[in-house]
Length: 264
Image (cartoon, rainbow, N blue to C red; front, side):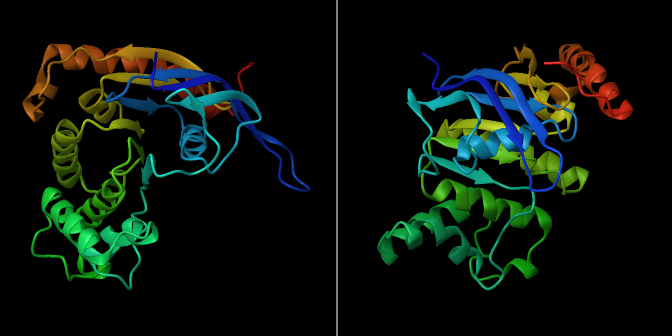
């Protein structure tokens, strides 16, 4: 049985005194334990909304989402999110930011310090433990965010365009480091991105999400060998995979451009 199951998930936002906005309608997918799954789709198609449902911050008004066979009832320590905006507390050092989740769980100081130090080393920030966020580059801030998410040892790591704000070289480096960390931890990862190349490079499978309201349009397996390196992106197999994802996505981008909403 799949570890994460989403069946016909729908969610419509109904703000007061404004028109209702259907974000998701009939989105279904399954994720195996330890799988790296990416979601790609047009802007506004509900990808981030779905992550927030998985995190337990939003409740769908149709369908159901289960993790380990249990319905999601709210936020829990088995899930953690890495955000695009870093979300670091500016008054806390690197080490204190990484310790935050452990502190909220009541982990004793010595234990959370040791755990945080291990993770600072894992993400390549040894020597920056006492630095503050304003003293770090974008890539370093994202490493802190990743370490903070890993600190509570979640089963599921949700990543919402975590590298979108980074320059191209730093983004490539962070992708490689993420794959290395994932290979060691074997977390179940659901990764949202607008980059076809990033999705193809990182993933075991790629889910193409339709234009709003989001639904599962295509499920594309990635049969490239692991471990992966940058040179693999130059191979004919990688380019064929990129083309397949693009063909599934381009119709949805066209719908978004003309402002239409596809029928359910």
